[in-house]
Length: 196
Image (cartoon, rainbow, N blue to C red; front, side, top):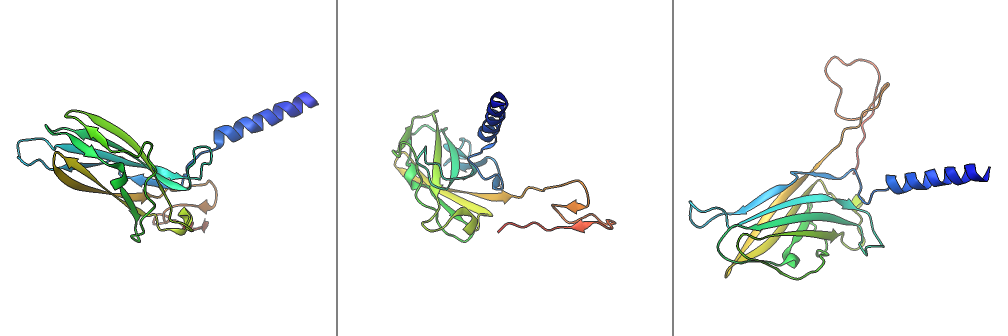
């Protein structure tokens, strides 16, 4: 009997560990990734800097890694030009559809990154929610990410936009979760599921 209880407890613990996610699955964003190019000064030259950005997701608070509830963003910056490029991660700003700016990014280390020609850099930034607000109290249907890079002596700003992707939930039987029923659908029950 004790062995059976130990096995059952072990299975539940394993399921809890495997099933736990640090992200809220209801928040997915597109495009994934989005690309931002800084135009070349000469038409025959490639863009001097190309940046790809992805919203990884909305994270729950994580005490082990010292992170509050936040939006996680990942960037890749490519220096395609002949000049060195300096990227200061603290120049990044993330705002929502209501133009509410999230907190300054948590970046480790928070120091500027210098890229020589043909070099790339990868960066993960965590944007905490404003004090007193959690993610379910904000309009996160669209996000705007801004940052600045310096190409040689010239500072240049970049901006990209993300749109929330809504998942459709379907269940067998008379219940319908998702878009409206197709034409000619009769009978059953329609349930509209909205998250604010």
